[in-house]
Amino acid sequence: MQRVLGVGVIGFGTIGTGVVRLLRSEERKLRERLGAWLRLVRIADIDLERDRGVNVPREILTRDANEIIGAPDVDIVVELIGGYEPARSFVVEALRRGKCVVTANKALLATHGSEIFPAAEKAGVPLGFEASVGGGIPIVRTLRDGLVGDRVRAIYGIVNGTSNYILSEMTRERASFEEVLSRAQAQGLAEADPTYDVDGIDAAHKLCLLIQLAFGRRVPFRDIPVEGIRHVTTVDLQYASELGYAIKLLAIAKLHGTQVEARVAPTMIPQEHVLSDVNGAYNGIVVQGDALGQTFYYGLGAGMMPTATAVLADIVDAARFLLGETKRIPHPLGYPWNQQRQAKLVAPDSVESEFYLRMSLADRPGVLAQVAGILGREKVSIATMVQQGRQQNGWVPVVMRTHRARAGQVRRALQKIVQTKVVRGKPVVLRIEEELGKEAA
Image (cartoon, rainbow, N blue to C red):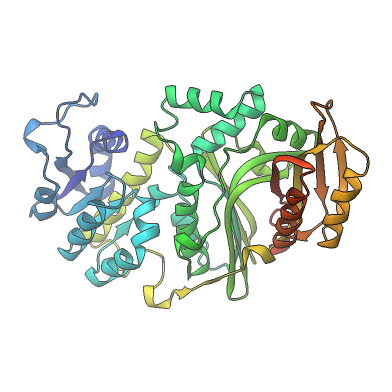
């Protein structure tokens, strides 16, 4: 007689619906692969009336998540409600009770991981979170297990499908940010409140987890410099294309000895780089290792079914653990929590790169020389300068590309330029990652 392993799902929203669909549609295949029955025994959600397009017995539905956590027939708890609370309390309590836990909640793990990861180790049960980064891309398994024999030096990722879709459509159609965002919301690709996506917060949550998996270092989410895409315009995208670049919202982490350089920001990358071809709602992640060199991971980073496949893979991993197929001590990050060190972040102002600068300058003699002089005194050297477009009411658009400079030097120079009153509005500044990944080789 086959063993029965009970699964309880907390959160019957988009991803929860996808997980339930897969558990039901793939039930026979999973029984063949596991030699056991993964039985969906409980679903908790505050809304039990909405039609999800999937039939489940009414008796397994509840509004009380604690019924799932405390149920003796639930072996694997799947948390898919998102946010911090009550998700944190549910996960911690499930682990305390010795339940295996699967979650897609990157915000929770990025901010409360110091409580949750050790709790999983103490309980001696798996904590699966593959779906928290990259949707259906198996990047967590890759970093934790597949690349365990290599030393990872850098990660560059497009890890937010919403912002990538917006930038891709702005580039393709030369449409404004507001126009494309509105369309994305209408299509369900962007939330009604898109703040986490377009302001880079979601990508920073994911970067926290990638850093832990890749470098064995803990970086507090609040310490990661984050910049969104609201200020990127079709003008910048056009200039970038003419200069041979694409603009992508990148999550970047580099290991410098015992320090970590980390940031999330819209970045100009060469058009010939593989990440420049990652468009729409897709994600792409480049991992740079000492032994393997660069590897690239690509796929849908969000959506019901891609994310649900990652959740189901974690459920199956938990089932195999419970069945005794693996005796591995379940360290969620691939090594004991007490072996992971607190990282010191490289000071953002000290990070070097090339920069793209766009500003609207007063159209009068001596202004360009004045601006160039201020940049020069801050040791920011201009590589190219383009003055395109017609004068408008005494102002003219100017685009500059710098040689390598420290971010602090550029920041101080622009502050002084703004103080001269020769620039209208706020200058646009974008980093250029010309040698993307090569410096870590």
